[in-house]
Image (tube, rainbow, N blue to C red; front, side, top):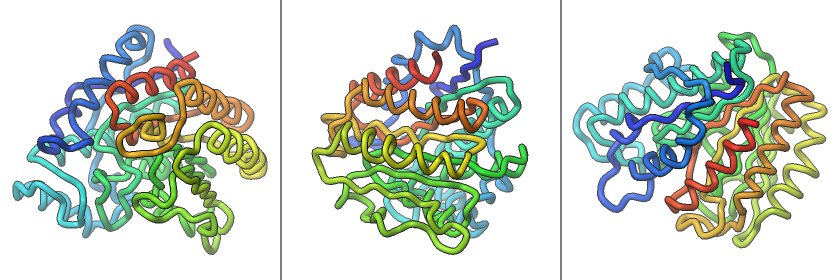
Length: 312
């Protein structure tokens, strides 16, 4: 059985964001095509619908009901803000969460070592009480909480190299302490959060690590400064039992929604570093979840480089 597990499926294209929207079904199709060489050797992550109880690990019951009602009513946008939806979006969003939970089950159950979930809609902007930034539910945050609740893990490290700050993930764990969150992101840029002074509070003090970089930043800042100089030392002290990656590829050069300069080789090296940290502290366990990336060709090549390094 392969030590690498993969989820790609055309069903995620049923989430219809409307004509001209950057977070389009075409993103999923481009990723599926790019990852087709990996599907034969990878273990398949079984799809399932996440329950509302599972989603409530990170989201309020009020928000869950509101999102469900908005979508069922035929609304084209969540009432909480800038997330386009369609009739199928509830089912697709709950399948995205369920896919991540399936990946966590495989990795924490020692049936796989690493996993990549090519799901949409993305999740890292979704806060406990609000869908925003193209996101309905926070796939990766729910996955981390689920790993703790179902599999008894104490400490989870989430890293986010999307060009946009993972404000929703930060909000979930800001006062927590059992989840360390590191984000590299362009600043000033959407959604405006993620200052270096935002370091957590209470038990979470020092467990939130933000690295806001200016437009034009690339390998030296993201890999060199944030990951190599700071994360390695932080992980040494934190000793995570699972590593999760919010894998956004809008930080790649020439993305229409970002101004970072990362290359495919940089994503491969970031992935290799995360696997090295996981091998030392987390039994090799890594679960990666797709976030942004809006150049179809750039998204495809960036994901391919990431998965090649994740599946070695």
